[in-house]
Image 1: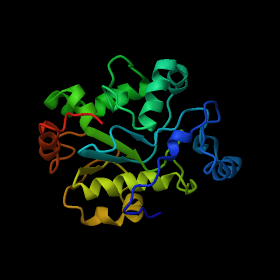
Image 2: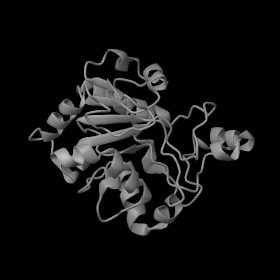
Image 3: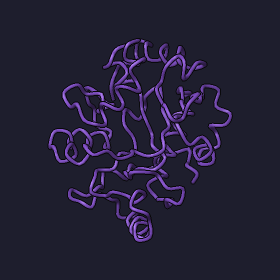
Image 4: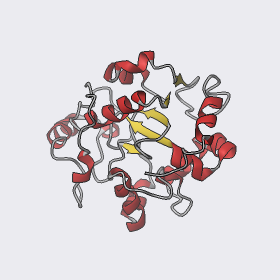
Length: 232
């Protein structure tokens, strides 16, 4: 799953207006997977996918596994204001809080989760600065209760790979939250990227001095950089 030097077109602007929320090119593989998957591994296309959160040109890039699933997600995804923010993010439209899960006006279940994981950075530089300076790219774009190692490779993942390759090209700080091997196979340049950091714990992905001892200060310093605060 290699990207290219030139940024491909963003497939997520073509996402359906109604469920199932799945790209046409991804749908056959997902339907085939779901026919045989355990319930905990089934891909939930009733929820809007979240392949990435934040500015595409953010100076700090977090690499996750997949958006996960929680009881409160469906309720929030049905809210018009939240869905509008999510879709604006998918289209890379300017937002006051580009990392929309940190928007204090939309205290979603996902927002609660991310606020806890990013709390040390928020305390250090401020919520809005973190929201403007951090991008999270998920290896797999759709929700499931648990990620399956047998999850299919999807055409849309090529765009996520391209986002990470672009981050390396601009010398962004990259923090690998989970799935180091998967990401490194997909983007070999991560193995030699000088500003790449790996957390001490993959169970607790809080970005803190203790969990990211080699990179926390560099992350905070990058977020404090004057010019970084502009939004796209």
